[in-house]
Length: 192
Length: 192
DNA sequence: CGAAATTTTAGTACCTGGTACTAAAAATAG
DNA sequence: CTATTTTTAGTACCAGGTACTAAAATTTCG
Image 1 (cartoon, each protein chain N blue to C red):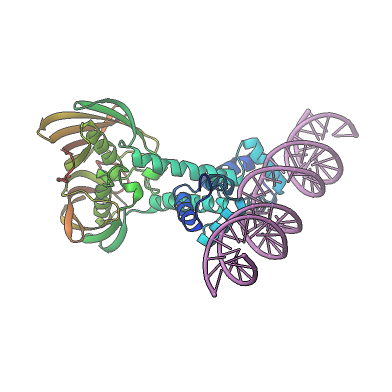
Image 2: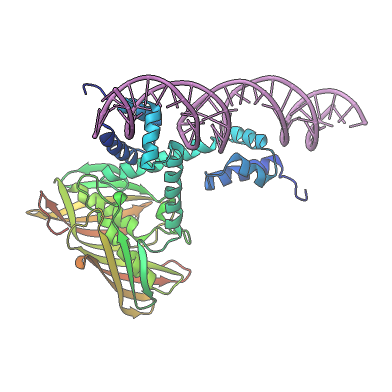
C-alpha cells in the first residue's frame, strides 16, 4: 500500500488511459511506472486488447499518413452528404480533438470556415474553383463532439463568378453563416 | 538491361524518392522492387543516410503526434514573429504539403483564413476571445512552399468588441486581406 | 484456517526487421 | 589484365515483443 502497486482493476483502467494518451511507451517503462513485472503489463495489454509498441506506432503513423494523403486529394472538409452540382450541397463535420483549443474545447475559428468554404467550392463545376471574397458570421461557439451540418446553395452566377451561401447547424441550431464569391478558373490564375 | 536492375546512381535517386513518398516499405519489398539483394538496399540506405523502417515509422508518428499536441495548445496558426497586445502582431506561415490540394498545389481557402484569424484573436487581451464576423478577400492563389507573413492591427475597440484588420503577404505581395470582429469573453458564452 | 482460484512473476523458444561486421563473388574501369 | 567498386551472402547480435509453460505469491471463500 505504501509504495506498492495498484489493485488490478484500477491498474487496468489507468494503463488503458495512459497508453491511449501516449502510445510511445514500452512495456518496460510501464512496468517500472506501475511497479509490476513486464509480464504483468503484457498480460494486462492482452486483456485490454492493446497491441504492442511497434504495432501501436505503426497504426498511428499509418492513420496519420492516410489522413494527410486523403486530405490532399479530398476537396471537402467533412463528409459529403449530398451534392447537386451548380445548385446545392450538404456536408457533415464532427468536431474532433485536433480541431479545438485544449483550454476550453471550443473549435478554432477556421474550422467552420473550412467546412463551409470547401462545400461552396465543390458546388462549382470547374477544373479549379477559387475563393475570391468571403463574409462569415459565427453565431455561437461550437465544441468538441458536436456534429455540424453545412448546407450550401448557389444564389447566383455571372460568367465564371458564383455567389454562394452556406448555413451550418448543430442539432438544428444555426451556428455559422457564410457568403462566398467563388471563381471558376480554367488554367490561368485569377483572383482567388 | 531487359529486366535487370538500374545503374546505382539512378537507383539511389529513385530509392530516396520512393522512401520519402512511402516510409512504410521494408527493405525486402524494396529489394524485390529494384531486383537487387536486401544487403544492397541496406548499403544504399546507409549511403543515403535513410534510417531503417521502424525508425522511420517512429519518427513519422512522433512528429505527427507532436504536431497534434502542439496545435492543441497553440493559439497561433503559424509562427508568431511579433506581438503587442491590444495593438498589433506579426506571424509567419509556411505552406506545407497537407495545406494544399494534391491536384494543383494551391493552398486551401481556410489556410490563410486560419493564420489571419488566429493572429487577430491573439491580439485580444482576454481569457477567451471569439470571432463574431469576418470579411476576407483572397488576392491570388498561394502555393506549396510559399512563406506567408500576416500582419494584424487593431483598428478600434468598443467595450469587449474589437475591430481587427489582417494583411497577409508572400514576398511582399499582398495575397490576403481580412477584417474581423472579435469579442472578448470572460466566462459566459457570447457570440463568436 | 486451508484449499481453490486468481494474479503475478519468470523462463524459454521464436518472431520481425533490422545493424554491424567479415568476406567472397561479380561487375566495372583504366 | 589488375585494381577498384559494387553486389551478394553469412554470422552474431539487437530491440521489443509473442506464445507458451510453469512456479510463486496473493486473494478469496467455505
